[in-house]
Image (cartoon, rainbow, N blue to C red; front, side, top):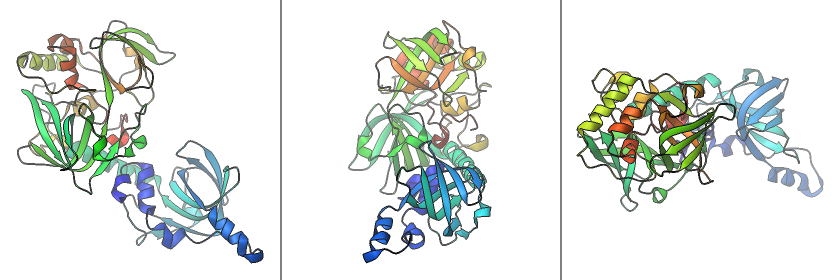
Length: 411
C-alpha cells in the first residue's frame, strides 16, 4: 500500500515510485551490443535502485548519501529520464520533467540503473526527486495531523479477526478505554528492537500487537471518544523506568538509574534523538494533586510500558486535542503533547538523586536501554502516585505528537 510510506522522507519517496516505475524507468540499461544479445540481458539483470539525499553535485556526478549512511557516486546518463514528484503523489501522471540542473544538495532522490561490482558507484538511467523544501513541508503537515488526530495508550487486548484493538488511556479522573478499529487499508507499523527511529518502523500485521504494547493511532474519534477509526497505527514494546539517578556520565552520555519498579539499576544511553525535559515545579504539583485525587480509582492495565496520558495545563485548565488547543472529538491532549511544549533540557540539567521517568527501548542486553524520553522534576508525581507503575501511566512516550519525527524537538 502506498500510504504506508508517506510519513517519512524515505517512505514518501518510495511511495511515489512503488508500482509505477515500470512505465518510466524499467527500460534496460543499454551498454552496447554483444554476440547473442548476452550483454543487454546481463545488464538488465543488474539493474538496481538507491534512495538517499544528495550530498554534492559536480557536472553529471552526484554524491548520494543513502539511507544506510553510505556515500555512493552516481553518474547520471545523458539520456536519463528525470522527474520531480510532490510528497504524497502516488503516480507519475503529474510528475514534472526536470533537468540535472534542477537538482540541489539536500534533495531526496531515487536513482535506478546499473551499480558497479563493488556497489560504490552507480550509473543512473532514471531519477525521481523530491525537493528538500517539499519534504520538510510534508513533514510539518504530518506533525500537525498527528497532533490533531492522534491518540495513544497502552494496549489492553487485540482481536485480529475483527481488526479491533482496545487501549487504556490515562485521563483526568481515571483510566479510559478506547476501542481502535482498523480496516484493510489501515497502515500498521511496528518499531524495530533497539531503535527509537520512526524510519526504522516496519510494516507489521495486527497479530504482532500484544497487550502491554505502546500504541499510537491517527484517525477519527467517535462523538463520545470511546471509538476510534484508525488510518494509521504504530506500536512497539518499550521499557518504562521510574526511579532516581545514581550517576550521570556526560562524556559517555550515560545515566545510571535505580528503577523503583524492578528494584534494579539500569544503564540508560542518551542519544541525539532522545528527548530530555524537566517539568516545571507548578506543573508537577498539579499532576501530583490529580493523582492524590484518584488514589482509589482502579489503575489501568499494566504491561511492558504505560500509556501516554492526559492531564492538566500549568494554569489548571485542560489541554485540548488539536493544533492551537482546539478540541477534537471531545478528548484531551495526551501527556506527550504537554511535554512537547516544555523547552528541551540538557544532560547536565540532571543530577545524582534526581527523580526521573524514562521511556526507553527494551534493549538487547539486560540492564541496558536507550532513552526515548527522560523526564525530570517528577518527585511530586512519584510521591503522590499509589505505586511507581501507576506513575508510569503518565510516561511521556515519544510516539506522541508525530511518530514520523520521533525525538524531534521541532514539534
